[in-house]
Image 1: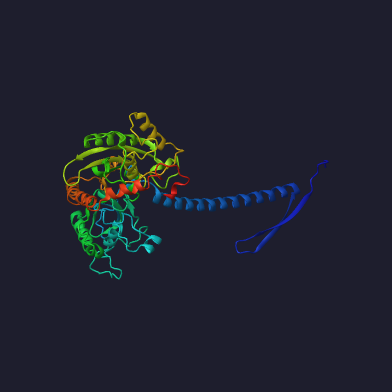
Image 2: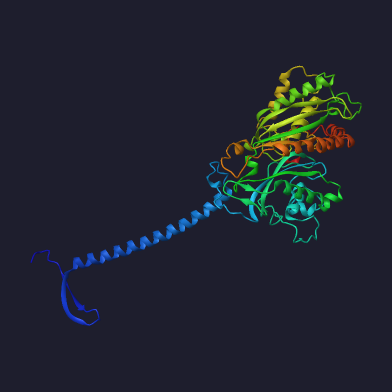
Length: 483
């Protein structure tokens, strides 16, 4: 035997039949190294099986987590412009099916406290405030606005509740107190009865539904008590994709501002509002020309942190693109001579439009620093505006009255261009809806704006206020939020 002779181990073995009886036994002799190798093989096999089971378990958990994440992503994702997820496979007629819809409507905002519904502490502190959305949520839910309202079984509920989150409430453009809208849009999940839902079509009686909702608005208790019938009008309702984000796809907004020429009366006899005619303007035509020239400084991409109340100096959120800001109409005769100013762009911050117009009027009235005497050099004016757009500049600017402002139009160019499959349609004010919106503008919005501006002396009172407080305007602020 060699020097590397191995130790041996004797292992007795038995042979059994299928019924369990032993028929014989043998003795097997193996080396110790073979025994160790066999034990190691068993360990490796057990380890492999354990790892395999763990991998299957982890894969199952990962799949579950991925599905959960996908559900959350699907809820928050933007509309897939490829249209692949827009197909409706069920070709049967569906009854009482819930889908997201966009409601196109107009309203006279002067008697209302803005578009957005009041919630939480604001509602507790000011339960009397009436907003456009509060009325819309009531009538969609089948309520007439009474606190002790009991649902009539014969009245159809188009939404499951009046909670904004439950119905996924969205708005294209939020308007402030006193601001009207010729065309605005409101989105929520609705349940419509007797809808015809097929692969390429989605049909319901749009005209009848609009009439029903408009009747409910006029029968709303607070609307009737305040005599505000026909001040809110719904003109169109259409279905949109499940992941449609209204304010995201609304990429163009056009406002109009009605400005009485009394704001440009630079020779006022009122000692409080007396000002310096720094541009030597005599006629109304000259004043309108200068006003148009000054408004043009806002066009383009600038930092507008000074023209709102909730943006930090130089923040990216204050960088906005003003596409148009100019006079489009002059009405120099009549009971209230005025001009109409067009303001258009993708989006505007809170109070931005009113502060731009207020700043220009204050500038023409000689209220800006270093510009209270005759100005003949445009360089001074250019430097004035450039300073307002600087990231490090932080000043308080005057804000024009809200009564003259109204939303005129919205547009969804990218959404409309990428609609590739029915049953969805572009969001446009065309045909009858557009005609009714223009009629509402002519017969309701403009007459009410001119009436309020004249009867309440809105501009005169505003001029008195800014002249009495002119020391605080255009002054550097330690904290702009102290407006």
